[in-house]
Amino acid sequence: MATYDQKPSLTSVSYSKVEIEKQWAHMQIQITLAEHNDIAPWMLLAEQVIPLFGPMPDFEAILGRKIAQKQAYCARMSAHKTTLAGGVLIGGTGREHWIRWLAVSSEHRRLGVGRMLVQTAISFIPANSSIYVDTFVEGSVGADAANRLYESCGFAPMEVWQVDDLVRQRYVRPPSVSV
Image (cartoon, rainbow, N blue to C red; front, side, top):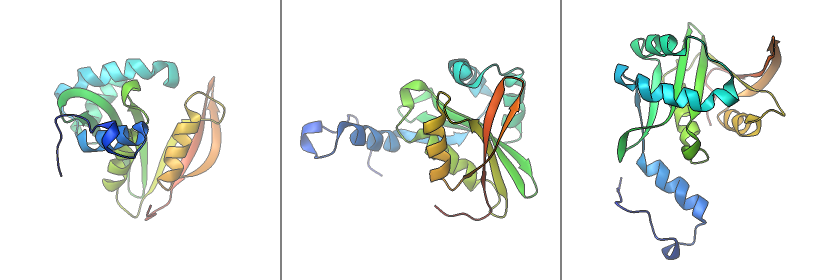
């Protein structure tokens, strides 16, 4: 793959600025297993998404456990290996697995980072497994983008559930769905 020191000139191609930004981001993003020294950047990302996700008690402890279990993946800009563009936590056993947490930093949204993280998560889950994710319910902030992302990755909506004030839409990706 070619690497570039500068973004392509907008005048030299016939793509829109958004298309160029997405292509540039794909060339520059690396998905890797999270390591223990990634906890601080993850906590900054978690703080950024509290307005969307709500409180996340014990997140740091959960993150540490997921890193130890090799169930945490980071998206980083290759030029800035310390900059966390996003992250995903997975879990599950047998034939039921979950995307437990997915977030993309505000400056890296709409560049395909979320899709890359979901596809990475799917690739590390056994193909004969159902994969579940709970996300924003229709009408809430972030719902349209999240629902489009999961549906485009082979997930289908299931039930809406509520615990106290938290309302979420559950999605499932049946075993061996190809997209």
